[in-house]
Length: 294
Ligand code: KIV
Image (cartoon, rainbow, N blue to C red):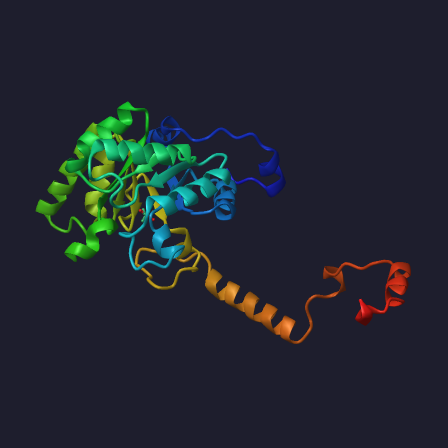
């Protein structure tokens, strides 16, 4: 449900829980997820009625200018998570555990996940398959909802440089299905499938009980996620084929800033309506002073 600004500000809204997300899958209503990294944009996403806001480690690229997500730090993610949680009343906030914050051991993963929860997240996401089963079980038994991430795995992609699109063959699809089933059995409530062929993604969505959220994985998934800066046309360094641009904000922002620059240079800004004045009495008294001698 999308609310007007005034209605949204007044409303007391219940946060989406794991059960709310799973109920959407159950009734075949598509799940809408989007990334956000700060208070201001998450407020807009939440008011627009998205179901899940993912504080993706893509923050390292779109907010900090990294070339990929591998160097993204816990320290930075926690700041982004805090901002998003402050701007979110309804959507489930999922924090993306960055590379290195969950692989060493389940104790390290638990420590990182608890930091995310303390900074306002309602769940955490991690990238990987069967090798993470014990970690996922430990987090879930501590009460922390976990979202998995299979298919194209950006955190380690640059080390291997294999094909981006996953599950193009029967054999690789069967491997991916095994991974998805393992995550499902370990207790994830949701799985992101990134750049998986539409055919394999549809089968996985059908056979697992967790909610499958696709990015570049076709329409058969239980829901979709896009990176906010990609869909708004704000981030222009990379434009994956699966992204649909719903706006051209970088053009809009460029035009607005150029206009502001010209207005200041030509003394067209600020205008009287942007200016504060003292009374004419006070101004006359002020002018009687000899400013130079003071
Ligand atoms: O970090 C991110 O934005 C993600 C999405 C691509 C799913 O993991």
